[in-house]
Image (cartoon, rainbow, N blue to C red; front, side, top):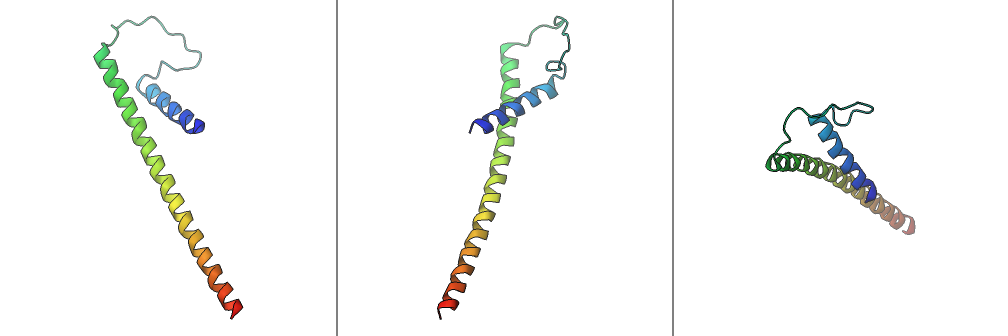
Length: 92
């Protein structure tokens, strides 16, 4: 759970870095902003867009994991059935 939380935070940081490449550049000195700060409404919209993208990616990862899990379950059930059939033949 903690690992998934960290992964989601990293995804959010990557999205922020894509939108604002200079913000998270290591060792970069940032001059004072020359533009006016975005309004609360605009920054909220940006945050909503970032969160929507993080949620979309998280959902895709979850569905992919569920599919892998489902495939593994099917393989396990097939192996159990095969083992049971072999055991029946051995006892006959």
